[in-house]
Image 1 (spheres, rainbow, N blue to C red):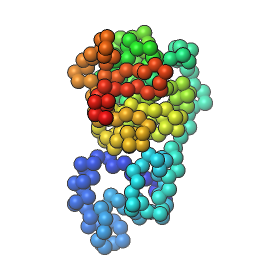
Image 2: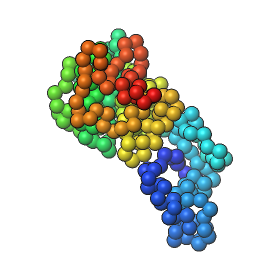
Image 3: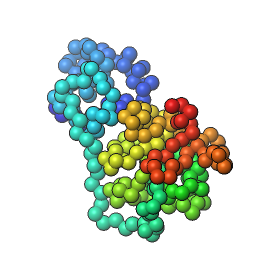
Image 4: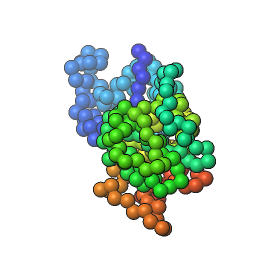
Length: 249
């Protein structure tokens, strides 16, 4: 049996609770009614003859009990459409200043959580902000500052070569694609498996984990002469640094 497996738990709390309950092989799903000597949900990692993990070992915590059947195969790159009409503003992508991509993926759809605060925080900075809305109407973002461009969808193979940094809520697919293109990350996600992914981003040294999914409380920004806000761009750098992350470092 071959299984494509993720080492990221759906929810750490759920996993902790369930692992205490289902260690007895419920309904005899594996090997009849024989008891298991590990948590039931670990069966996806321990039972197959071959386990394929779609990332690199450098993005996974070292573990002494990894089975020999586990193989890291790198990210699974999607097949993007060959025919794609670029947005009207495509030629606005600069080469003389950082380009920041902001996305929340498809599940966490409320742009007020991450996209809108980032747009507001970077409105006066010398960067171009690109927003993809996962096919939601761009009008939901409200008024856009002059340095923001938005589209419902842009294939990442077209866009990521132009991107200096990805601000994301930690979706696994977007993170792996950013790493494949060498794009550093600022991550703000705590729901589903995102807390674990964001933690790995910081642990692997490929970005900053804000440890929140609402990086700016009440959407209030403090941008003034000596303080460029919670999120700001560093000229000449590929990273966006955050006051909150610096305080916790």
